[in-house]
Image 1 (cartoon, rainbow, N blue to C red):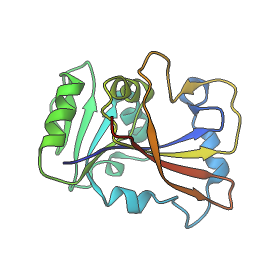
Image 2: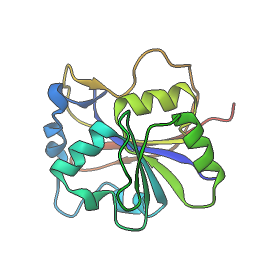
Image 3: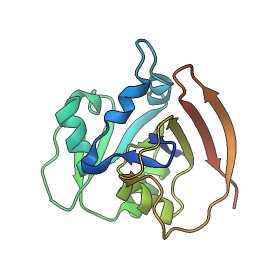
Image 4: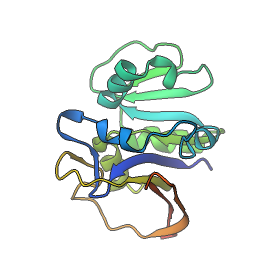
Length: 178
């Protein structure tokens, strides 16, 4: 069975973005030749689920090829119907049904690339199987929280901890068996 994986960075105090969707704090741990395991992780997935706001941000800042390399299916979760572009589907249906369908299909793992609203919905439905969270050594004080209130308690099992000379610490958990 395919797993739904979260691979994301947050500040020490739990924010994935500063106010106004500012991600500049991520630059504090940029280091030439260091991708914090992203390339190894991305090799284990063939499907991406991403919210429209995150998708639009990545398109503007990085470009379409960040998601669509011709080898992956991308589902942009949106309220606005749009025609597909290549392997990118603008999905307006039920998120839980999509995840159940994708998990039941053959393939590599599924990557949730945010944003916070999508992650919150997936956690509410207990659909995220593994979380790889990079902790950036900064206290932001405000912004967009990774973990919002109003979801059920979930037990996690630690799989791995990695530390880096930039001060970044990466935690890898899996959902504990219910």
